[in-house]
Image 1 (cartoon, rainbow, N blue to C red):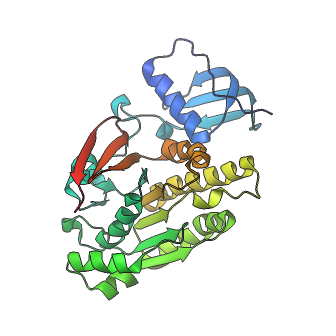
Image 2: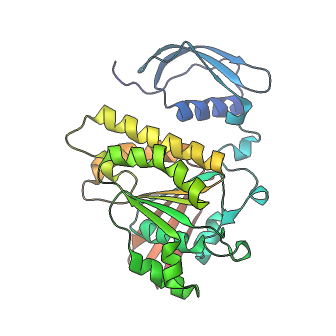
Length: 298
């Protein structure tokens, strides 16, 4: 059935319920033609009966109050940062814009190759003590673009007064060369790695790169990418881990644009980084929109 843009009729819907419903639809990634019944449930949940949609779901989906905003001004954001461990970038401008990245959240970085550099920096900073902005934890780096740079990690370690060899041993790198390999790494191997190494940081580098296989159908690729992102979002919450996914620019950028909303819709934080001349600009897209900071290259 042809994909249609979501269109829902609201009856007596307050702003809070509309935003809650939008969040649920994004989480399910269901493209509706018509939603017939919208009922509040006990405990603040919603029950929606679907008339028609692109992929036919069971007749009724139920969502608990965990899927709804506790406070409408924080509907897209993480839980209180004081309740969990958190990780800082160590870059003054970014820390001022975002603050620390709390465990249990998925963060999307996109727009510039600097996103990859920052992800490698986070792998080193995760090994710092908590009072220095770290997690006192190793990191798992899933390399979707075959671009992990051990020399950069060693240099970051030296700048942070860590032993470079120890820092490299604290980053568990696993590479994928097809989208199916990446999906398998995320959904099957990653939970085992987190448990066996007690890692609290997950980086999925160049997350969309392998999902542009010219020999596979667009629908299948989009479905696999959505499955991967959904699993990362759930894993972050279940394992109380900091999860960072990067989307890097490529020559065929126009083919990569359709996948970006899948990642951004499920992320707790989303930051777009652009490069111009001798400086960078980071713009916060979630949980708030519009705030930005600039800094010069060093």
